[in-house]
Image 1 (cartoon, one colour):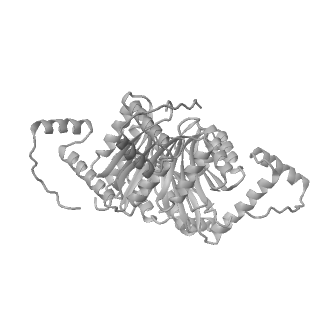
Image 2 (image 1 turned 180 degrees about the vertical axis):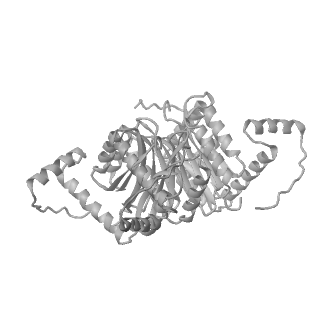
Image 3 (image 1 turned 90 degrees about the horizontal axis):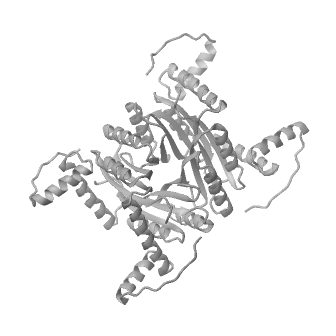
Length: 137
Length: 137
Length: 137
Length: 137
């Protein structure tokens, strides 16, 4: 646990007021907590840009009746076996599946996995959440 | 399965070349597949904006040694019991956890859940992936 | 929180000694905690026998290269959509998958789901864990 | 893929009839498939007894309002970080949680993890599913 420091920031009052409204809307109990989050967000982006070890999640929505698609997605995941930790599968309705894949590894590999999965014909929507392993943050 | 249609798009050659490079980089086998994805991305955003039933995932990175934090996160999740389907927990190392929460419901509730979880003191990083239930897409 | 009661049990000393060794081996801090667990185990079995609402998990081990198998498993799961909450998928190696399906509902339906999945040709091993929703226990 | 062999088994007719009824009840399409499952079940048990690398799942039911319990369970899981792959968490109702922990490693460690988690005061019910990594089965 490191020492807590305090410092001043000068900025336009209007910008501060807008930011305070947003922070309140987003449930932050104080302005400092909102600032800490912004700063950490930048640090996480830096980890991804610098190729440090990162973590994240990929979401996929697809119709499981498309047989080739299901098998293709599974093959790609096994090819990235070292990156993927586990995945969570939710049967949204009789047709649609939500699959969420947790991963840890290199940003380049993660991006490649995300692109490979999302570009499979029949995937209705895909997202790639970039987060951190929690180290150095 | 609906009928496949074909249509023309006119645009600047330079823009098309840049887009084709990007599509190739991202593993798309053809330009049409990349276009379909862009269009679906817009439709998903519309579902979120219009308050339709949506699905998605929240990622959280935190240090499980912070006792109050762990309990707070669990309380919030039980308060949003109707929205949350299940969550996946990965022990990244002895300190850091990656938690991924799958949800389905109203965009407003999902946003509120995401904001509540991310603003808990001690959460190192949080993301909210907005996707779809797959209906009408 | 209900009142704590104390009562006596008479039994053969040899049996008690064996049980105490087992309880110690299994990490129980005291004999009463071990007894509480035995009693709850009986209550959970009763919930299953009486057709009360129960919860549980099914594990499946299979080779994802068997295409028909993968699709068959997914179809069965979507047919039991009301019972299944979500599933967790782990890529054990390039061939083998561990799938764990969480469910809540009627014991009869759960047994039927477990039997249907385990009997799919190509499933190497399957288990059905019978537990409780935590109500009335 | 190995060669399919056929062999005869001699047994009491009554036993065979009982077994066939059971196999039918359990959805097996033919007697051979039911036999294959029995044989694999024995092989999985052998892997556990001989200390080979195995896989499995632990289920836990608990009331998340018991703060010390939640933190204790998380500490134990982080102590067995090398064994645990990921866990799945379902909020059964406002009080009760179903947690399912997927693991791979040594049978002895798995048993120790299961015993440690199940014996935590406040855990209402716990199960340990013993399965295989799929190798040599």
